[in-house]
Length: 258
Ligand code: G3H
Image 1: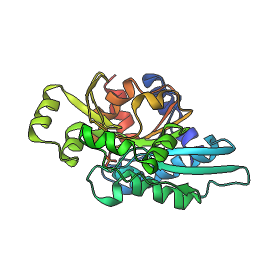
Image 2: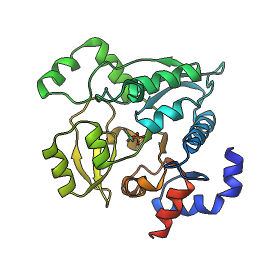
Image 3: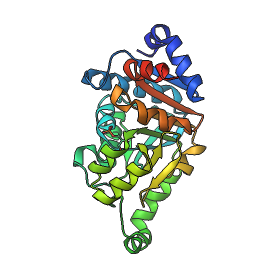
């Protein structure tokens, strides 16, 4: 599939990677807003990228949640070899969403399909300051958080700001504030405006944006016309080594706006 992408969509992929100043874009034909199979194809590309990118030795792969990631995880295939061992960790704590799309569940499924190991993080993502500091003292939580910070790979999606705020049950007031700040994208618990500037940070436990800056493998997966603003905004300041896996509908719309 990766080879087909290189020939069929080559030009579009190069243009999009150049626009966002990132290492690579992979584009699946179709529109994931309308065709669920497109998200399955994102998953196949993620699988191929992991097969190629993960070095021998011990890898720690941090995995985010969401509906895209839940489908992507279903398409991951065994990644273990005699020399390569992979540990999957959720990139963040649970966020009160449906269990099947929480980072814990998605990373567990990916680990099972990859024949790798998994460690769960049993902590809600949004916490009071007090609870946060208490939990950080817990040895079992500290050890998983330390692994998350050592990850050499992250697989994540990009969401629409207001949609994600509602899904995370943020208050009406907070949603109004996000709208006033023109938030259009959400990823890693950060909200971004259309210039890619961070306008809100959810107090959270897990991977931070700083953590991914130097991570060797960063795979961002998001498509569909509905996510064009979100993808464009987030990608403005995405780490240079990012690979964006998206679809034709989003790619065409993004390039049309340039
Ligand atoms: O955490 C959520 C992602 O940023 C986007 O979620 O794949 O359900 O649109 P989604």
